[in-house]
Structures are given as structure tokens and as C-alpha cells.
Image (cartoon, rainbow, N blue to C red; front, side):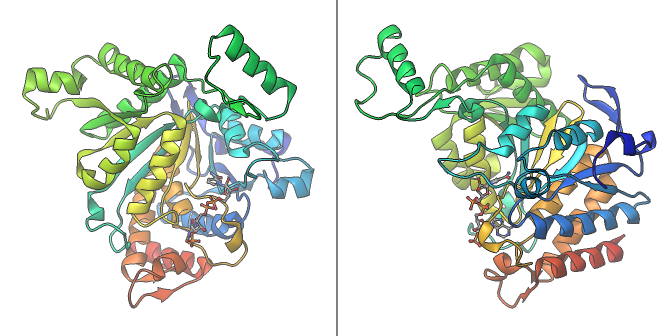
Length: 420
Ligand code: NAP
């Protein structure tokens, strides 16, 4: 089905938004869900996810009408543009969507379509849970200790795209302004320079941190850690930390306490009845996730830190073939795996579709389809535990059976039918 508002008359297949600001909505039992396969391996993993997620919906008494939407190469072929307005409109209209990866050229070429899509949809929180599934091989000795949920700010920081290319009049103008008017006259080396700007706003920070704290409270998590590089970037990342603490202290009463309070008033004793908010410098955090894995729960981070940290967390629980994610706005969820388009494997029916399938689990949880979500999760775990895996896990598992992407999806569907 192509998206055309006139051709989708059935109101009963749309998410009904009750209160957008409060993120309140109702999902019908047979919704239309836009699906964007994306570039590279997207056309391998997208259909695999569709098959698995449909099976779980049907086994739990529901169904999904998938509606293909386009961006990236497929959109260039079909419509001669990178990101058609229809695609953005369809996701806005139906509120729940699944997306594969989109290629971004390095250096020259168009800007990231992922970043553009997140901005145009205002999906301000990129959420990436990293938990270990039984049987998944890992480079660390105790992968089961990893059970974190990363909240990455999705609309600002150095991803805002405010930058100027070397050799242009614009970059020279900015250099002049920075040197002559702002007083940084000995700071930028002479010669060619590229300059970028890193905006971190109170609005962007607070809504992200709020969402992370709400999640921690709802899911009975112990802590929220603000991960920043505020020792160096005091007025951006340092401010992210300060605004984060402000949310914690001013908006949640006794439900949330800071780590300082924990030590000053409670002798460091972790309370049962409150979420503790603390902060860590990003480079330290990258080692803490390896050395003190079990101490961390929910992380809230500016955009770039979140990108790095979530890939590093993903590596501990089986790599990018496994790591799921989702972008959230108000009453809107666009689920997508952490991995990219891995062009060298495109069209080979080879890569692991678990990451996009588990992203679908996040989507189902958001829709309130928790039984279907759990069924998918259990079926993926069952499949991997029986050593039926794609190439990436196969190379790490002794005695496993190597399956193609589509065969692996079929195996998960069989397990869904068995477990239902
Ligand atoms: P990538 O596409 O994630 O691939 C890096 C490596 O990760 C692959 O070579 C492969 O490792 C492994 N991998 C990724 N997905 C896998 C899967 N489903 N199953 C098994 N292994 C998987 O990262 P990249 O090469 O840095 O980026 C390629 C393009 O994707 C770039 O244009 C980038 O901008 C874009 N990208 C898009 C998104 C997005 O759409 N959200 C996110 C990240 C990157 P082995 O070779 O070791 O098997």
C-alpha cells in the first residue's frame, strides 16, 4: 500500500491520540503500521521483521497492515528525492512505524536522512535497551550483567548540522566572528578549517532527562546516570548535567534523589522507594560499562555520547546484529535497529535480523501489546539458544547451524507458533 491520505479511509486502523503532550493514545487491534526498509541490508532484515512481527500479532489475536514508505535509495529510484514528504506525513499520521537503516555518505554528499527524519518528526528520545539474551555469544565474561537502557537526545548537539565547510566564505566569516568579536584570537590554527556548532538547550535536555526518569520510575529501575563531558565542554555538556539534576530535584519530589543526597542523608544505602540520579564523565563511563556493568541502569546522554555509548553497550551483548532501538516523540514511536546499512552484505540474505525484530518488540511494548512483544523476545531467545543463528553469531558459537536471514526468521516464526 502506498501512502495517500485519501486512500486510507479506515479510521479504525489508526492510533487515536488522546493527549499528545501527555503521550496518551489508543492503539486498535489491527493498525496500519508504516514500514521503511531503508538502504543496504534493510531489504534483507525488513521483510524478515515483518514476517516475525505479523506472526506474533496474529498469535495474540491481532493483526498488522504494513504500509511500505520510502527514503534513501528506494525513494530516489521511485520519486527522485531522498526523503519524500509523504513518508514523513505517513509516520506522523499513523504514529507507530518500523524503520531499517539509511546510508549517509561520509564527508561530501547529502546530510543524514536519519537525523533529518528524527528532526522532522521531533522524535527527541532515541532509546536503546541493551540486555543479554540467553545463548548469545559475547566478548565479555558476564554479559548477563548488562541490562541498561540508553536514552540519547536525538535533535541537537553536534548533530544539529550547523557547520561550515573549509574554504567557503561562510567558514571565514565564522572564524572572523569567533576570533575578532568573541576574543578567541589564539585558538584556531591558521590555514584551512571546518567549523561546527554544538547547541545543547534547556528544553532539549530537560524533556530527554524527564523521559529517562519517567521510564526508570515506571520500570522499577534503581538509577538514572547523566553521561556528559562537562569537565571540558562546560557550557554545553556541563550544562546538560546541571539541567538534568534540575529536573530530578525540582520535578519529582521524594521519588527521585541525587547521588549526593544518597550519601549525605542515607549513608549510600540504595533506597527501595526512589530512583537515584547520578552523573559520570563520558570517557569514564565507557570503562564503567565494562568494569562496573551491574551498577548502571538507565543512562541519559547528549546525542553524540549516546551514539558511542550505545554501540559499545551493544558489543557486550552480541553486537550490532542484536541491538534494538526506537525513537520516541509525543504519542509517536519510530522503532529502528542501532546498526547501519552494512552495504557490503546488502541483498545477500545473510545478516542478522534480530536487531530490527527486537526493535519491533519495543514498538509492540509502546503499543501496549506486551504479550506479543514477550512472545517475539522468547522466540528469538529460543532460536538462538538452539544454536540456529546467522553468520555473525555463528562465527562465535561452536556447533551452531548457520542460517540465512530469511531461514532464521522462519525459525523464529516456528518458535512463536510453538510458544504461543
Ligand atoms: P553498520 O552498517 O552498522 O555495519 C558495521 C558492521 O556491523 C558490519 O560490517 C557488520 O560487521 C556489523 N553489522 C551491522 N549490522 C549487522 C546485522 N544486521 N547483522 C550482522 N552484523 C551486522 O555500520 P557502518 O558500516 O559504520 O555504516 C554503514 C552505513 O550505515 C553508513 O552510511 C552509516 O551512516 C549508516 N548508518 C545508518 C544508521 C541508521 O540508519 N540508523 C545507523 C548507523 C549507521 P562484520 O563486518 O564484522 O560482520
